[in-house]
Image (cartoon, rainbow, N blue to C red):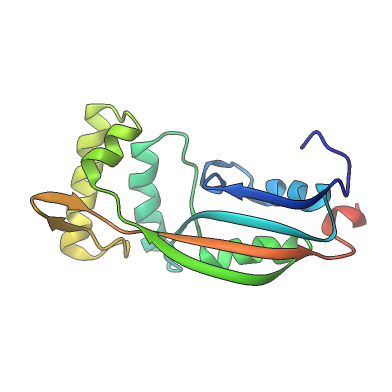
Length: 164
């Protein structure tokens, strides 16, 4: 529970954290609760494929790299959270990050045993297109595409928490 009163803020945002939350719906519900009616709620995060098997494949190597990763959602899943929690989406922007695998693993201080498994999963993905992360080699280094989304909405007058 966020330690703020209802309707406290004009703008509530969360950047690159939703994939770390056990219950992202509860987090968005709290964001909406502390936002004033017609205020702005924004989330920027990684998104995975709309196809569950492909999304699960990417989430698997993301989780191995950093044990604090719970699950990145698909774009439609993230938009659905907004709707379910009384926030009307009015702007969606997608983009990409293109990490180099060794630097990406180093940033998270991934232990060698898990890093080896992550490398193998990404190489397999490069050969078989299992996640839509589109791994590729450039100048001898392995890279892949992390898709991102920024979703901006307006909190409705009545939200899910108002009914409870």
